[in-house]
Length: 175
Image 1: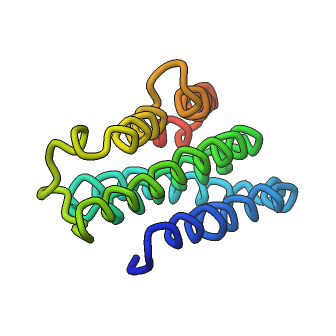
Image 2: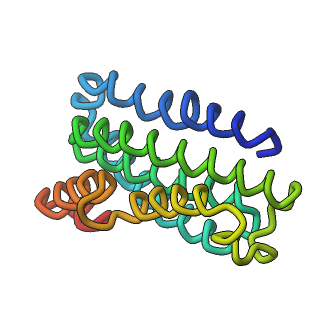
């Protein structure tokens, strides 16, 4: 994405993440009458989560890393919808909006502090330069990682728990 970082955060939070998954959640009664479509949504969501996370690991641009991790989280939300667990998907959607906005706005601060440099290979010792931003990005990263006692842990754990206890081929595949 080539826009300024605050604009990127608004685009991701307001349209990309919210619109697609929210539309699936709102159309849940229609999806429930089509089990084959739910299975396709489940598989595509699982593949999206895996593929996007893999691509995010290979990126060097800070905004691309955050954007691909957003796509991975979208995969989590979509395969949760494919398991007919719409409330869990909505919970993760709301949690994701908060910690992803924190990461995008923190990335804007880092890019500004580094005079427009977006290559993460050229970052180093940012804790000395911008300690407040460093601590906020660390909190956002820990929440996104799903470590215990933060919101990402509870929403991701619920999604994986639902996938495990569904006892279907698709549920075990995405688990």
